[in-house]
Length: 272
Image (cartoon, rainbow, N blue to C red):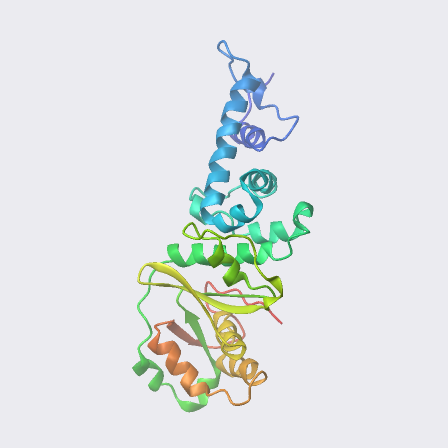
């Protein structure tokens, strides 16, 4: 058999670790008393266990809701379709909620992807970089006619999660210090949540629908006037000056630019 290039060898080992059949990796391995495929299986088992453990750490409530055996089955399927692309496992799992939404065995648990979205937001909050908050004096120096086109960057630990299910109560009921568990009354209505880091801990809080719309629009990089329209369309009595002051007081704004039709660096805009 011809000697493989480094790229070919790496690709073969990767495929073997993901359990892909027909991989030539075993042909490149010296058995040394043990069948090459058996050696690969040892490492494959280790990789699967390591990835599953990392996902369990990030999504403990999802794991508790479906039990560890089913979670391991889902994690193995996820790993095969979405292997890690970086060395840091705390950054792995961003697409797990979307995977669960399309995973046929989860169809009877419509709330599960949103619980996973909340857990991923909590994970991001814990590991996000820190930044100094924006000083109000900098905003005061902006010409009034430019203010509507300001685009803000929010603290990287902040994210927004909404759901037609009471995912906050599901999350709270399935913490290690709770005896209950389960999903409770799913007819209890939906929720709009703001997740962020406070004092080194990931926190979530329920916010009103107009405030959620306003802050999420800013988070997505939309200009102030469009964010204001999103809130006012839900409640014409929203005090926008108060909303901006709250963002400053809570230290959620860290930078601003004049909107040019493109989101600030590092922000992905989800068009409605």
